[in-house]
Amino acid sequence: MTLGSKAVCRRFVSLFIGLLVLLPGPLFARPLIIEGLSEAPLKWQDGANIRGIDIDIMKAVLAEMQISEFEFRLVPSGNRLLYNARSGASDIVLSLSQSPERKEFLDYPEEAHLLLDWRFAIRKADHDRISFNEFSDLAGLHIGAAASFSYTPAFWDSGLDIETVAKNNLLIPMLLRRRFDIVPLNYMTSLYEARQAGVADELLFLYPPIRQAAYYNVWSKASRYRGKQAFQKRYDAIIRKMQQDGSIAAIIESYLGPQNDPKQRYSQ
Image (cartoon, rainbow, N blue to C red; front, top):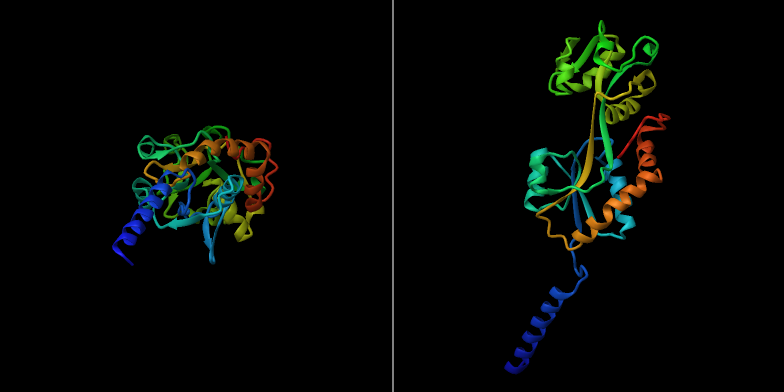
């Protein structure tokens, strides 16, 4: 190759690279990186696949947007999850509640895809004996609680007969063995675990919840994904449609079973 032809080749390569920068579409774009913590039934590793409620909701959103290049990842800790989002190593984080500190490096959508709550659980056989609307309704009952969980300040300050245990997963077995009359639990996670253990029919979760929070799929402000702005513009409309047409409820009930509770709200 002559010096002249080499110069022409270098010029062509330079022009081609410049054209790629100017093109509006995501030519040769990398996959969308979506991360979360492992917590069934929201998201967990099942053999070679990651599955769960969060995964199915996000896959429905991606299908609506015709995005086929994406990767779900589970990370081992909340600190690592937030570090990756802050640094731009991930694009989207699944199911985070709002906080002023997180808003410094995360973009929250308008729509929460889930409302997660804590409820009191009792033995179904006690449904005529125990009900809950306010903490005074639980006077005289022996209540189990996990020492490491905050629940709400009002719960701990209620003056009720509360006994703590070391681990949250002890509460349902101790309730069913009549060690406790009533226990506060993460509703969605605990109902799923009870179904897996074959004891869901022995439990009754009381309404209203003692605590409820909206959870969002959020974007890293540091993300350099080329489709980010287009995604953010469409996301809220898609989630609203899935709320209204029952798609989100159907996904949740595919893991938890039919709820048949007119007061149950899964999302905003």
